Amino acid sequence: MTKYFLFLLLFILPEIFAQQSIDKVIAVVDNEIILKSELEYQINLLAAQRKVDPQTPALREQVLKMLIDEKLVYAQAGLDSISVSEEEIAKQIDYQISQLLQQYGSKERVEQMYNMNIEKIKRELRDDVRKNIMIQKTQEKKFGQVESTRREVEDFFAQFKDSLGVIPEKVKISHIFKNPQTSSKLKDKYRAEAQAILDSIKGGSIFEEFAKKYSEDPGSAVQGGDLGFVKRGVFYPEFESAAYALKEKQLSEVIESPVGFHIIQLLEKRGESIHTRHILIKIKADDESDLNTIEMLTEIRDSIVRKFGTFYEFAKKYSDDKETVNLGGQLGSFYLNQLDKTLLEIVGKLKDGEISYPKRVNYAADSYGYHIVWLEKKILQHKPNIDVDYTELKKLSDEYKKQKLYAQWLEELKTKIFWEIKE
Image 1 (spheres, rainbow, N blue to C red):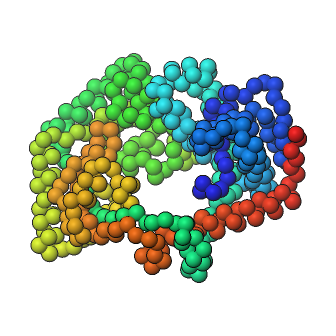
Image 2: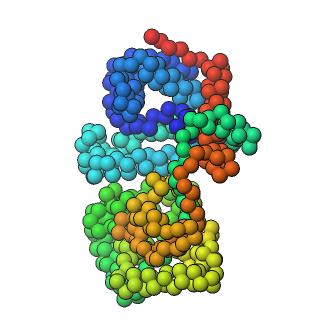
Image 3: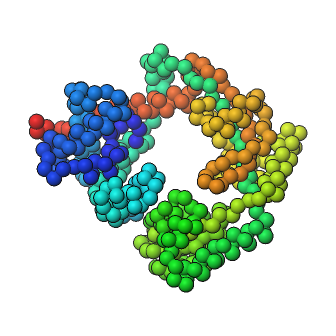
């Protein structure tokens, strides 16, 4: 949900491990309690974010209310029979662990910081993760489809237009993206590297150690190649087909996907979800591949400029960006401060309707391509206008409407669900 909604415990890890064995109950909501340590932790967290004194009485009152609201919604989730699958819990826990690994750099460092192994950390996280998913599902069920009518947007604008400030400069852009195509000779070299690793593992080498040492997937390498539980439709089709065909603990042969060569091991299968680990050897381009890609994009640009077709038509035919290809390359509208440095530099040199020359774009660790960018329209900084800025104003109006409905709903819950402040 949005920032106006429930104060979820987004930083539950430090809190879980900071709680003391002896504590004081501050409030009771249905069958849940709010401990003094829990309240103080959230007060200190919010005070640090807002840069205010944690001893501020109003801050304590606000945080306690937020925690009570959270427990009320959780209680309602139980009444609504909101269910959470094992796959949902596992996926969220895996995400939390991956964030920790990125933050601290290694599994060993994480275990040292929390004085317990990764598996125990996962067990400690489980209940809070389940509760948070139930809360989010309840909010989404109640308010996910709430939208403002045109009249409500107009009323919102009339009420708040003097406090909305100015709309920053924004641009509407599209692109055609190409991945450099590696030569067959170079591709064979990377396949051979993957095959050598597979042969070593079959010969008795430890998968996790080889993943940490050789895998070029930074997100999973630090975890010994572990990808966690994932449902169908997430992985590349080539990867997925091979993974689902494996028996538990079985190794695949070398599998090629658009990003490189994989060695896959199926660890566990639960219904339509699989738990796998892999080692990735990326397919990297060379100078010749780069040059061919730049030349191709230059020819596409020239064809559009000479009116041999529209940007949308060429994007649908040639772009390698799967997320935008069916949209004719449309990236959308962005405020200038939302653009990264490279894209901002490209757009800054264009006038409305102009197309850039090919530029390199990095989109992941050691992954890149080239694209041409079309600046369809630039809208200068201006005061909010109901016609020009309707989409942005509607989003604000939607959130305002949800906020009001949410506050009303919480008051209703307080009349139906038992709650009590003990101090």
